[in-house]
Image 1 (cartoon, chains in turn blue, purple):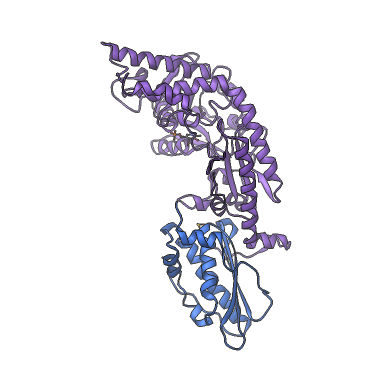
Image 2 (cartoon, chains in turn green, orange):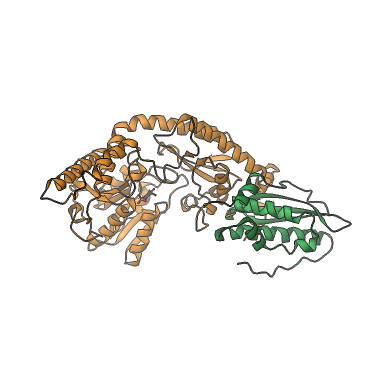
Length: 138
Length: 404
Ligand SMILES: Cc1ncc(COP(=O)(O)O)c(C=O)c1O
Ligand code: FES
C-alpha cells in the first residue's frame, strides 16, 4: 500500500518524540494499545498551571507508519490548545489530514484514545473526575 | 553500482533468469503451435518443445517425464492433489493429515474438503517450526488416505523431515504429498530418494515464469491417480485439461535445467551471504532468528527485532523489498499464522522481517541491507515506548494494557 506524503513526512521527521516527567502533576500520560495487537502509543501533555494551556506534548509509538504519523500529528495539534479544546480532537480529523485508508483508521482511533487518556490522567491528578468516552468509532 | 530498491523478497517470487526468457521467446510468434495438434509441423514443434521441457523438469527432481503434470502453479497443483485424491480414493478413506504451518493453498483446500466430508488432522509444529514423524504416526487412522507436509516453509524456510515421514507412509500404504514450492531448485529434491508420491511446485519461485507449475504424480510403486479438477480435452494424462502454455512450459524447463546445473554453486554463495546478513543483524540488541537454523533453506532468514513493529520497520527500510509477519502488513490485520503457530510471543511475531535472497543477490546489496536495517531499527526504537520500558527494566507482561 502506498502512503500519503503527509504520513511519510511525519514518519521520516516525527515531531515531538520524547518523554515528559510522568510524576509531575502538570503532566498527563496516556498509554493505549497492546503489544499483542502490534500497536502501543504513549502520549503525554504538559499543562501550564496558570493558563490551562497545553504547553508541551510528547509521544512514543510502537506501530505502523500510520500510527506513528497519527501520534506525531496529535502532538502538533495539542500544543497551544486548552485542555477542553484538546478533547475535541476527533480521529476523523486525523484520518482526513493524513489521508489514511480505511484499514488504517484504527491507528487514528488509537491516537484519539491516547489524547483522551492523557487528559484524564491529568484531570485525575488534579482532583477532577475522568471524562467518560461514549463516542462510537467507525 | 547499487540499484535501489534492493529486492530481498525472493520467497514471494523471483525475477526470471534472462536465459529463461531467451528460451521462451521463439514460442510466442514463430513456434506458436498447439502441442496437441498432431497433423502438422506447427503442432509437432510445440510438442517437441514441451517434451524437452518435461525432461528438463523431470531430471531436476529425478522423476520420469511422464510423471510431470503441468498446471498453472503450486496453488492449482495443491488443489489438484488434495481434491483429486479425496475423490479418487473415496472408497479407501477420507482422513487427511497436514500441518498448521502449511501454505493457505493447502489449508484452505483442506477446509474446503472438510465441508465435503473429509476429516483433517492439523499437526502442531514445534517452536522451531518442525514436526516429527512420531506426530504423524500418532495421527494415522484406519481411514487415513493422504499425508501432506510441505517440504520447506515459505515464511521461515525450515525443512521438514520428509524422508522419515514418507518411509512411515509407505509402510502404512498411505499416499504422501508435499508442497515443495520453496524447496525445488534451491535444495536437492529427489522424488525417488525422498519417497514422494505427489509434489507441487511453481515456476516463479525458481527464476521461471509466473502462472506455470507442476504436480508430480508417481506412476510406479505405487501408481498414483488423481481425479481431474478441470475437465476437457484430456491433456496431461487426463488429469489436467487445457491447451498447454508452451512458452511458459519451455521457460519452466529451462529454469529447472539452470537450477540443476547451478544449484551447488548458487547455494554455496547465497547461504554465505544469508549467514553474513544474519550474523550482522544479530549484533542488534534483542534480535532473534525465527525457526530452526539447522534444517533450513539456504536463502531465507526470518528475524524479529523486538520492540519495533514490522510494518513500521518495512516503511523504514524502504530501499529494500522484504516482507513482515506483522498484522499491520496484512489486509486482515492478523499477524502471521505461521509465526503464531510456533508459539512466538505476539510481540516477536509483530516485529519480524523475512529476507529472501536469490542467485542475483550481491554482496554489496547485503552490505547495504545490513546498514539500512540497523539504522531503521535504531530509529524506530528511539520512538518506541516499549523499548524505553525495556531499557528501564520494566517487564511488559506486568503492564495492564488497554486492549483495543
Ligand atoms: C509454499 C507455497 N505453496 C504454494 C504457493 C503458491 O504458489 P502459486 O502462487 O505459484 O500458485 C506458494 C507461493 O506463494 C508457496 O510459497
Ligand atoms: S498500528 Fe497496526 S495498522 Fe497501524
